[in-house]
Image 1 (spheres, rainbow, N blue to C red):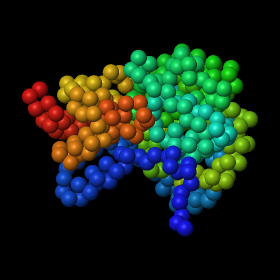
Image 2 (cartoon, one colour):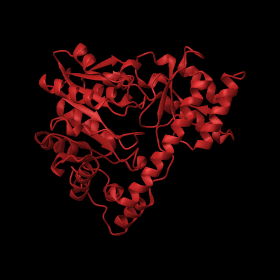
Image 3 (tube, rainbow, N blue to C red):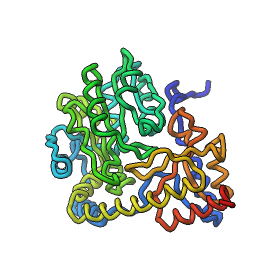
Image 4 (tube, rainbow, N blue to C red):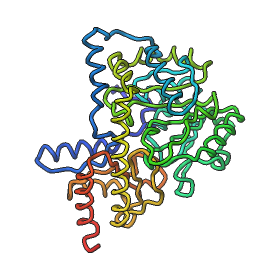
Amino acid sequence: MSETPSRRIDRIQPFRVMALLAEARELEQQGRDIVHMEIGEPDFPTPPPVVEAATRAIADGKVHYTPAVGLSALREAIAGFYQDRYGVSVPAQRIVVTPGASGALLLALGVLLEPGQGVMLADPGYPCNRNFAHFLDARVQPVPVQADTGYQLSLALVQQHWQADTRVVMLASPANPTGTLIPSAELEAIIDWVERQGGTVIVDEIYHGLIYGESPPTALGCSERVIVINSFSKYFGMTGWRIGWLVAPGELIPGIDKLAQNLFLSASTPAQHAALAAFEPQTLDILEQRREAFEQRRDFLLPALREIGFDIKVEPQGAFYLYADCRRFTDDSFAFAQALLQEIGVAITPGNDFGDNQPQRHVRFAYTTSLARLQEGVRRLQQRLAPDG
């Protein structure tokens, strides 16, 4: 009898973009020049003060296990960050350091959900959200969202789709793949209503530092019962370091601690020591310069893609993504992305990765490469898709 995977594995979908990325790398090995706009990873290296802090920590022998909830100094530093940036007082005891935002999400869902309970989330949305819910045998409740709500859940949509067994509402602001924000008043209203139903709101704020315009408040200012997930990956430029955090109500921390001990013991010790330097003034200065560079890229790419013929209904206020309707060119976004890669060497992400809400007519562009490379990508797209435009 052959070994077969569990049934839950069948419900978890792979990242289709990874197949495209592997194909792009193979083309590069063959000598092709590829413009990468598919992966949501900043092209900037980790800021030097962070690298230097990691080097010192390793040289000093700070490589042993930390408590499962993280270094006390790092939890205190994150608490200080919330106070300095948002004016919100968050006790360090409510902060847990994790192996990336993915580790934070797994802990949050693991401490909240019973099998069969519902997790409501926006469609399109980040695929790990629904896949982690499947992994925990929860019931995924995707809500199709459109441009009229900025591709975000609204209070009206949450109320409309709420069911008796709904336990968690997941929000992301700014969101992947759309880069849109939930208005602060709407966010507060959703949190208040869900909590009055006995549910919990989890808010993904991993792109919060990458906002182009007035910075919104953190969801932690709305309630002490909300769970917020964040990461050092995107704004802080530490993707491969695998370090993130979550903030949860105090009564959930013992359960989260117990889960962390068993699931991964603790986050990487060198990465935690490195992350301490992420909040230093010189590091934040570097990060703000990079945020301005991302804004310049958005301001170039958005009108350029619209001119070619992509329908981008909402201007993203944050992150580094543009979610585009491509139906002028195709009714199969995956085949379209493959054709662009093979024919003109431009790599983008098909909508299939982000849910079931018209994925075949959407693609995502990530402006995580230099302005010069974006200009080259636009030139190739213009030549291929709108040669007479």
